[in-house]
Length: 298
Ligand code: BEZ
Ligand code: FE
Image (cartoon, rainbow, N blue to C red; front, side, top):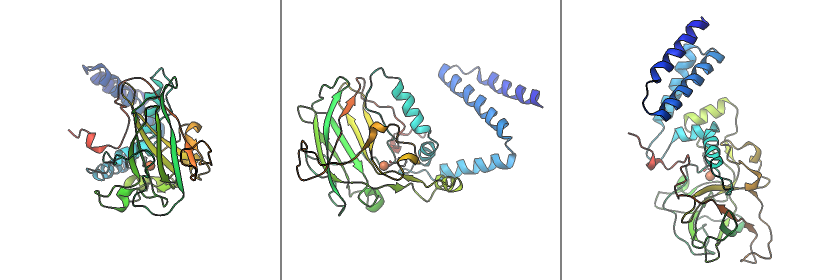
């Protein structure tokens, strides 16, 4: 029986061996080797594989112009974080650690002035200031760097979960000053559960996973001649910090706590100071993200 299985795997690899594009050949042959080994290891039954196909079908059917269930699946399998980590390892320069982009990024964040609050509609919560410098890996400031910030409100909701698309809240674009400083006001975010209405949620339930992300603040930072940085800061003490459902807390370096800070620009507010380091390179970050409009559906 094993000889037949080996012969089957070999003949699939042989057919694919004629693929002219070398990278496609490498990826597909490796995928087939691992897929066949996986099916063999778990002795996959026809009923189980049909259940798997039904799951992937439902995942595809859940996708729309503004919902990408396959990215959510990739996130909850840790694959998005793995691919991003592999991407970051490729660089020689030690930039700030990255984190997942997530499905709540929007290109429509308003341009705000230094010190403005991104909480423009949301009420309540603990007021806070975020400030720091954007520099290159040598610590040289990057004047004019763009800092986009987005997060949940104090109850754990993103604007698009609460309002029509036109109402934008808890997000903003800031421009660093001539010394690379940025400053924004906000309120502390809260941990929140992933969407509860799709096949990925059903998978999490079957695995008895809580499905929460720890409270975090997303940052997308860009500066000319430097690689775009997509990252997030996570609040110390959050109960889900060690068990993030999408494995976004890739480094202790990204865990922060608000404190009273004499050096902070706004005296009366607790501060989270964070300095971001950008590696040199082209702007395109090439990350696994949920900017669904950029996915080529053929
Ligand atoms: C988020 O942080 O917004 C997020 C990231 C990955 C999956 C779901 C949500
Ligand atoms: Fe998020």
